[in-house]
Image (cartoon, rainbow, N blue to C red; front, side, top):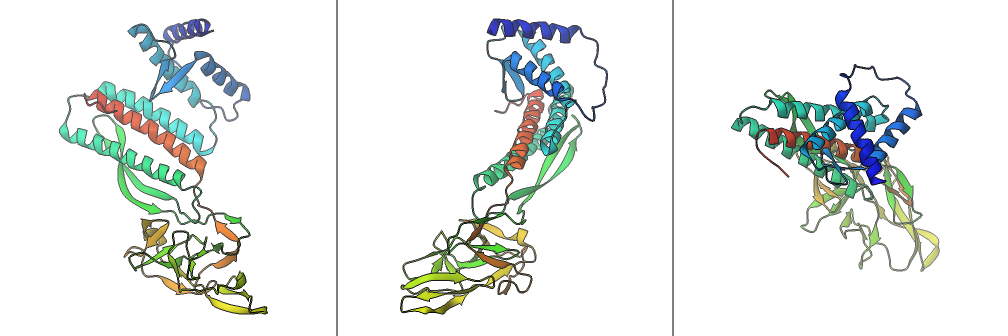
Length: 352
């Protein structure tokens, strides 16, 4: 099976070598499913494993000439894949990555003597790509963290004149403060914020922090605390003989106690805090944020007032991370890193 696959590969490679220069073809508006199936069949028959930014056969290539032909075949496959339809962001990312690979190959061929300033720019761009990857991985790691807001990095680009490659320049990392989906839990101490606002908590150093995580518990003193053990502000203490707890949309915490099961007792009032620029809040770990000059001072009030959201008991707010988007971003960043590594290799600087 492997021999026949290799023979098929060689015949296809020879065909690629002797074929006339490809003619530019406009992408089809409605390509058929048969075209996609054909490409998938072709790639399956080649039995290649993708390593980094190139192809490596399952069996050794044998000669440098064969390796060169395989590289040419890789380029032809890339051109063919570009003519196929993409779906949403994934299709756009694949097309952009393929263009980047072609630009990287041209850049390596055009790279002249190494200029220290140019090398510094390329190394900095490689560092920016690594930072972006870490942000994506952080988002994926917190996809199931209650109330967590995804992080994103402001990035601009500059043209690298010697090679014509666009290099990323890092800006600050910020939170994307869109709402996450509300998930029902039917747990009385789970509270989701439907709208703007955060809960205030006392941090271990005595300062005030903010969180969207409403998975509350009772500590040994009967106080409402977060999952990390931070006491909620203002403090709300629930009696030991409480039979049930009720939290209304406006934040009133009440319940029935064993001493008077027929009457409702008010335990306290939840308040919310919102910021003019919530993206400026500083993440300090444990799903807690701190106020900064960029965020501005908090606007405090009862839920449902001053532009604050209301509360939903028995719900939690899921993170606003979209897994597919993060995976597509990671794929594009990996291809971008491969281009930069190849450009640096053209200058005689080799990076793992």
